[in-house]
Image 1: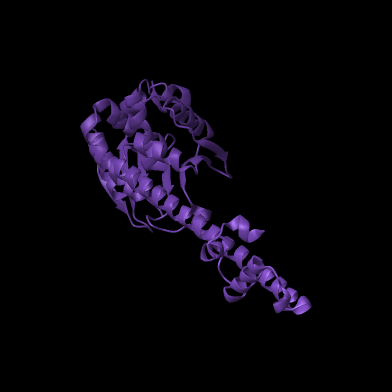
Image 2: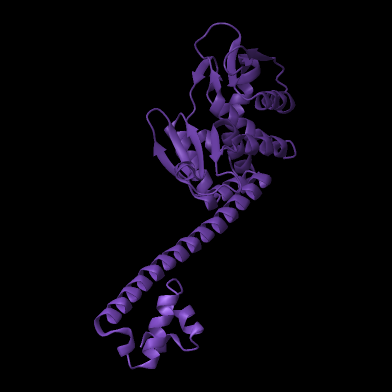
Length: 307
């Protein structure tokens, strides 16, 4: 089940309570991930955010005003789904981009900044948290089975999965290193035109969500993991019991067939051992009980019954 929406909603609420430094790092990650610089176009429009999530679009708008005093409009572009566009003029956006160590104009020239200079701005754990929150709301997805859902082939196929999809390899690796410094390990994979950080470990997903401040999602994930663990244990026990029953039935059938052959060859009345007669009759009268249960019925030990 896709829990991405729930996690993002939590992050949207959490970020409002954070420090200005963390909010700036959050906006910096979103700007790096979702904004485009129109460096070679004429006209006033320079920096453009294109955002599919309405809540995120208006939160970005609010942060641009609160943190950088950048007045603007949020335009709703008719598409499927609706696209929310924020356009900033060069004069308004350039100072912010320079502060973020992102590509900008300097002395009339276009300066393309490398990832290293941009990531170097993330100088402490608080800023790293804000930055990675911004990365997740821009590029992240998380799936885990629905609470109470039994493990099936379909749920195994999707299972637990958290992924952040980047358009630049260097940016993906920089974020992977940042997560590593925060004691969180995600794998890197190079897809056709994108680069992903991902994990299929429920423990790793829980660590990521906790770091992002999505505490309710962590609780849901833990409940799912516990319930699945219980269900899997019940299934394992049921399978073991079923296997034992099959084994008992098979063994009992062999004993019953052996007794019938014995009776046919020497005759039932020609068995002189009273205990042997008792055991044979007990098994013929009860073809389903295990050896332990049969021994208990005959008031003897299982080893005696076996002999």
